[in-house]
Length: 212
Image (cartoon, rainbow, N blue to C red):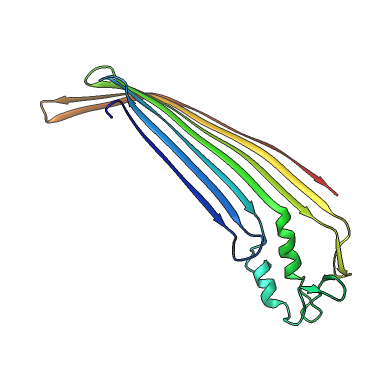
């Protein structure tokens, strides 16, 4: 209607990935609302939310999982039923790609991100208006990677388990205020002047811990 206009949208994405334990899930929501309070005053608010849940894997072009699969010999089983353990590539001497992919399920990161924007604009005169706008971006992040102990051969083993975890958050905001003056003279000339200021703030902090 003439007083308010709003829009709500969202998206959901979930993909398992070509390689096992390489999936990603994303959620996106957005809300926007604009107001016409009077003939000379209007404003609006918007909000967006983004969530990411991802399982990480080694996708390096030379040393990643897929190049390792191509270089591993085809006669070595992914899981050796005789030893009840991961198979050992004795011909190609490549670390078992199936074991590396299985460990990827313990390598995850999560992220939540929030965006908001508030603005207002006032027509002081027919030639002069004032606009104020504040925007905020907040992000929290978590990463976790667990590497279990294992032994296949003396060449392919991990003597102790390890856990690495990192958490962080960031805040960014900007506040701008400015006057805008537009004056037409005899329909042939226009005077346009702007005066304003902007303040910004950025902060990022985090912590990490590793245990064996």
